[in-house]
Amino acid sequence: MARGEIKMSRKIAPYRITDFEEAEEIRSYLLEVITRHREEKNQGKVIDFDEVETVGSTNIVSLSGGSLGGKGRGLSFINTLLFNFDFSAHVPGINIRTPRTTVIGTDEFELFMERNNFRELIFRNLSYHQIKKLFLGGELSMSLVQRLRRLLKMFTGPIAVRSSGMLEDSQKQPFAGVFETYLLPNNAESDEKRLGELCNAVKLVFASVFSDNARAFTEAVDFKIEEEKMAVVIQEAVGQKYDKVFYPHISGVAQSYNYYSFSHMNPEDGFAVMALGFGKYVVDGEKALRFCPVYPDLDNNSPKDQMKNSQTEFYAIDLDKKGLNLLEGETAGLKRLDIYDAEMHGALRHLASVYHPDNNTIESGLESAGPRILNFADILKYKYIPLPRAIEVVLDVVKEAMGAPVEIEFAVDLKKDQQGRATFYLLQIKPLMGGAQNYSINMKRINEKQIILQSAQSMGNGKVKTIYDVIYVDSANFDKSQTREIAKEIELLNRKMKVEKRPYLLIGPGRWGTRDPWIGIPVGWTQISEAKVIVKTDLDEFPLEASGGSHFFHNVTSMQVGYCSVVKSDKSSFIKWDALSEARLVEQTLFCRHVRFEKPLVVRLDGKKRKAIITLEG
Image (cartoon, rainbow, N blue to C red; front, side, top):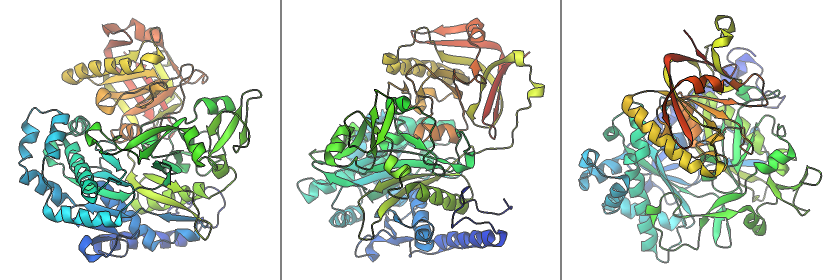
């Protein structure tokens, strides 16, 4: 591939660029788009709310002055790209759009803090719950309230109220999942109650600047919490109404770099993770389908494993819920349903297949009786819509435009228009940290007898020599029904390590950071904030794949924390448990052990080869 070439696909495709001059022409065009994006205030850009009769899908509309924040900037850029770049020429057969979007700029946040005398909150010893209650009692500006009232005359269906902090999705430190998002049914019995719920959601997004998660993150990057400013993104929710619930056919995330490629995949081919219903299910690290958009019909799981790891529940907006109590958190407006509810709604038609346990096979479609598997076969294998192609092209173009590996969040509405096209909605873009770098492990310089851990599936890059401590889940006492208790034990150990300012190596079974306690340890980032390397081991009925689309996983990447898997079936991956058991025991809990070595462990992470080696030297 010539230097300067835009890699659009590894397969022969009509839009693949093979000529150096043509690649430079596209680069110049994208640079021109970026320049216009910075200079103009219309044509896919940011326009003032008072200048529009209605909010369309080709503009970002500002409800107040100030910065748009991280998400807002990303959405503005997406709209610019969609307005100027003809995606339909490269991906015919599907619409690529953004939902109708408005942004409350950071000026309103600063005004809110000043008007209500909340600046001193950062110095008070208040819990996050107390702060949220105080913010709910605060007053927004009259101009914003009037604009929100007008907005609700345009947005009559469910809406998403999303955070857009200054640090969020930034190039240098892209926080993910730190601040709050609220999904509102927007169907209260009166317009004033609808307005009240929207105002409350905005206030609670403001309050999330002072959440425990936000405080932990800002400490980790040596940033003062009082310097953060919050914008708020308000979008129409993507989806369809079914009885008394509302949800999209598909939500997901995709990344342009894949740390866990296999077979003939390359890391640059990227990956996507998607599920039925709202994307909270995906970003919380629950069971969802992972695939490569370049090779969408390629998988390495047996039918039985696919059944075991298939999505069984999903999130929908509860249209029957009256009087939302947003203090319940992000799930206040949501309802968790079984996939068989979606089948009754007719929403599984192109998403699911049937598993036949008698002969261990999977039959596409829902014609037969038997357990349902959400493998999206009609889309990924039989091309009902060109979704993989759309993801691949969007990732390539956005990555080239931003000049860095990227992650996108998306939703899909399978309801086709008069031209027979479904709609792919871009919800968010963010830069990825921690792509493949140039550190390389030289095995000739390593004494194999000193290796205590080796992994052929790792992410991260570089060499670390500051870790003396290891906290690991004791397999002898492990109980998969007690993973929440294990998470609490790890949190307590992590607090002690934070006080002592000691980084550590964390080892345990299943998916770290999942919200599903039956497939891993459901820790939040604040519970393991001092871990500098995280190791995932496989146990019976615990999935192998990391939840690459989750906010947890993204934060592991952005914080440049090493992450690797040790799989029993892979002879090149192992842990010398004897070395851990022989180390000095610092603390033993019911499920975990904390040990300390006299000399530092040496961690080597090879980003290109995705290899990790940890040695005990000296």
